[in-house]
Length: 121
Image (cartoon, rainbow, N blue to C red; front, side, top):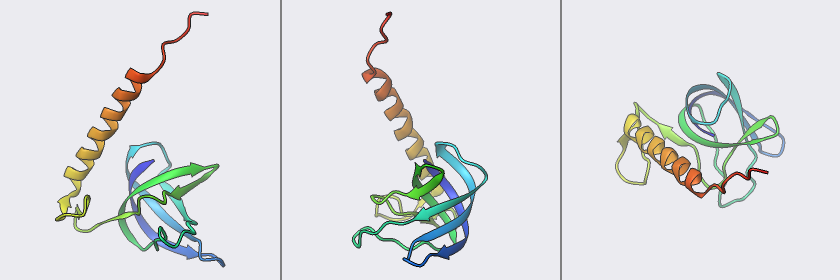
């Protein structure tokens, strides 16, 4: 799942796991309800991030009924509708989301081309 969320509260568990309570602002890929919880249970020291309140672009995966952070891409903070997307100067959120939508569309077209033909059996 790829989405823009507004995190309003973080709960920390005994072993350092975090649960973020967020409102879904916009979904680019995947589906979720308006209010979600995001679990941050990444234990790798090199990939560990701490969650905080604010607006973020997040890449999540579904583990049963939980939405979890992807270890390979941290949440990206959105500040005044701008964000650092590729490590360079901040870009407008709308430009970043347009780029992501383009990548999603391109990937879907490539997946469709590579899909094996259906059998008529």
